[in-house]
Image: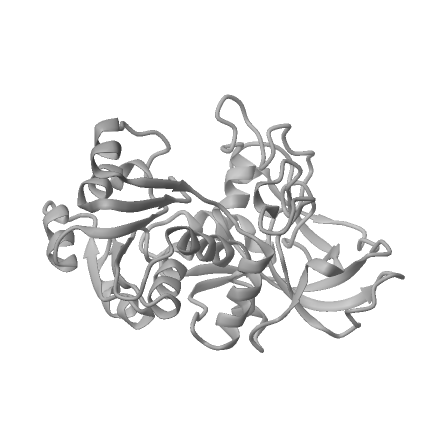
Amino acid sequence: MKAVQVTGYGGLDQLQVMEKEIPKPKSNEVLVQVKACAINNTEIWMREGAYGTGEESGWRPEGVNFPRTPGSDIAGKVVETGSHVTDLNTGDDVVLFPFTSSGEEGYEHISEDMSFIGSEYDGGYAEYVVWPAELCNPMPLQDYKESAVFSVSGLTAWHMVEQIAPKPGETVMVTGANGGVGSLNVQIAANVFGAEVIAIVGDLSLADKMKELGAAHVLSYRSDKLEEEILEAGGGSIDAVLDVVGDALFHTSLQVLKKGGKFCTSGSAGGQQTELDFRTLYLKHITMFGSVLGTRADFNKLMDAIANHQVKPVIDRTFPLEEAKDAQKYFKESGKLGKIVLIP
C-alpha cells in the first residue's frame, strides 16, 4: 500500500511517500481501507516536535518512533476483521475514535497512557490502517469525505463546549471561528446548546458563511476596535470564550468576559506564551479550562448530532494522498473555511 510517513522531526521535507506492507489486524482489531483522512494541527505539531515545551516530542513526552504514518481524522470501510471481533463486519463504513486509553469512563482523555493514532500508532495518511474494533463508530453520514472531518476537531470542539456548558441565550465568543475546530465550536455552541455566538475571523468576507453555521455576529480580529465591537455585539460583557488562538486574543478575551465568565482554550496558533495579570482572574472570578480531545461519551453525542444534521461538515479543499506536503502547507495558510481532506 501507499503511505505518507514522517521520517523525523522537522519541515515538510520529512513527509515521504512510501510503499508499505498492508498491516494485519490483531484478534480485537479491524483492517480499514481509508477512504478519507482530514488534516489537523496535531500531525503538523507532531512532525515539528512542537508538543514538547523543553525539547521536541510527539503527543507523549517520550517522543515519536519514526518513521510514523500521521493522520487521525479517518473514515473508511472495514475490509478484514480479527478473530475475536463480533460487532463489526466486512463492508461496514466507520469513523475512528482517535486514541486508546485505560482511563475510566469520562476520564479517557486524561489518562497517563492515552495514545494517539498518527503519533503513537500509524494513522490515516495511508491506504489502510488497523484499529481496535471497539473504537470504530458507524459512519454518521453517507459520504466518506464529509464523515472524516470530525474525529479530532469535532471531539475537541464538543468537549470544549461541554466544559463551559453554555445555557440557551448565553453569549459565547469563538476565536479562529473559520478553522477546523472553530467552525465546529460555532455550530455546537449555537445549534446544539443554543448559545448566541460571536465568531472572530480575519476576513469578513466569510461573514455570511459563518452565519450559515449558526453565528449571530461575525467580527474581524484585525479591527482596532475589536473589544468595543465584542461588547456591542454581546450587549455588554460576554459569558464565555472558546479559544484556539492563544496569545493574540488572550488579553481581549479576558477583558470582555463578565464576572464569573469562563475561558476555554484548546490551541495557540496565535502564540504559545502570554502575559497574565492574576488580578484579572480573581477580581472577575474567571474560570479557565485547558481542553483537548474528549471522552467516548462526547464522541457518541457528537456522532448523533452529525447524524441529526445539527452539526455539518465544513470542507475547504481536498488533496490526493500523494500531495500531503502541499496539503499541510496549505493547511497553515490563513483565510480558509473548514477542513482540508486527503483522499487516498
